Length: 165
Image (cartoon, rainbow, N blue to C red; front, top):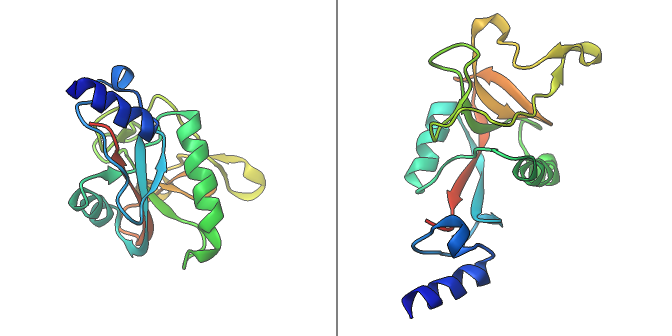
């Protein structure tokens, strides 16, 4: 009976008990935006990458990780829709970094990148990110595509939390 109720709750929330092997499902907290089996929280405050990472963890999640084309499309669409409200106009921290080994990008969850969407940079788009400009860019931001950025800069950030655990 418990599994049936759990399955019904998961179906209502748009996630599959069988596919995700979840033991419980929940709704997104107030202020979070739902997509599939995740909730996303956009911070209007600006923090360094490490402080943004900690803030997301303190809310029970992590900096957003974009593992699929669909997830990236959702996040890009969402961030573009609120871009005019960003105080710096464009940079939002995501949960990727190459802090431990240059060029070896990992998500804060420990996975290596299986999908990327690096934006073209420079004049006429000839520079390909990640470019590690000045040897100091080790944290991932979204700025109309993925970009490597200096971790101690302060930007808005996007947290992610799983609905189904």
